[in-house]
Length: 526
Image (cartoon, rainbow, N blue to C red; front, side):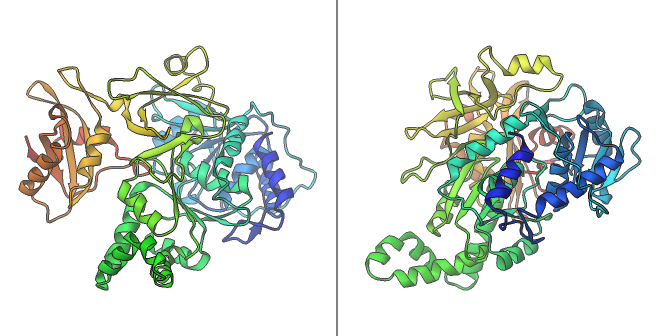
């Protein structure tokens, strides 16, 4: 089955269900918009086998154009909206892309490809135009995972990979219901947003409420008006929502009461005070519209207190793990009574895992295999030899360990592991998890650096304006005591500026390190 056939399957199952909620477009109406856009693109010269770029925020024209390209038998080049014209030039050249469907604001004088305004209204529909008979092994999307220059890693995902991911999402059927609504404000060009904001609702016959901005006021207005049942976000945003909720309750001087009820709600219900508990919790849940049942986190580890906060409010909180090469989520947390902190879950569907070369702490390299795993990087045999073994297992490059429940925990990226002069390994994620708990610290990056000819774990802290180096040094020293002494961070810098992040709010460690070298961070403790 190819992706357009997957759409047709859901059209038959849920014809009257809204697919594009804000636009009031049902599943039955959506293919008509796709056929009209396919007509326009065909008349522009797009033909089977062409690579067509997609450069847009979460507009309704994004999924319409996505399916239209597949309708014509093309491959979609997913382009990050945060890049530069130089990068777009390189990416289109390396993939042979001649057309880019983009918002007008991204247009520039491109020499090797033509722009098409994605918001153009399609003037006609060729009713005789039929979907191209794509095979499941045909490439559906192309994504860049390591820049656009040199010999980049380009991930081709086939229709088989995407449909297999859709099938594996059945793992979530206890939470996702046909006809309900997914809130899609994570960028669809990124694999996390693509999988949970597009494939998941498509698989379950749900509606998608697209949002092209991350403006808090716009998001809150959507929650109030549309009341979505499922909301995915990166952990950083869940922390921000939690902080805002707590601050709002504290401003009314009621946090002592709310926290008491949240922590003792089972006891209070047995005492016949269930109505009071429901009234308090419903008032807080109304921030998300009042109907939210499932919150999804991915892209990084979620703090235990954040997950606990939302589950105490009566909403399921699911943590997932995946990457572009796996079409997003291949592991997902389960509703266990006693989950171990920071677990990102167990394998989904047909996904197999192995943890190889484990150290004395059980930390080893995660290898995966399954139908939604891609078949290899485009035109990069060297990377493929490093990433795959003879049995088809793919090396994720992530270090993990497995708890007694069978769930996995992230210990760091292999390439980010700090190897000290003593030969001992230090995992930045472990230390960042400790330091982010410090009051007044907004974000932190820990990475390998050289001081006085010795390799050390160095930290750069983004802090609130009232933080002083003396206070930070004392807090870091106290946090260091929680880990082995060889892991201690004793050299660090402090800044009130935000640290650079990716579109999914992951810190760009290499950029922070270069800024340190360039002298951007002058307030140092060394």
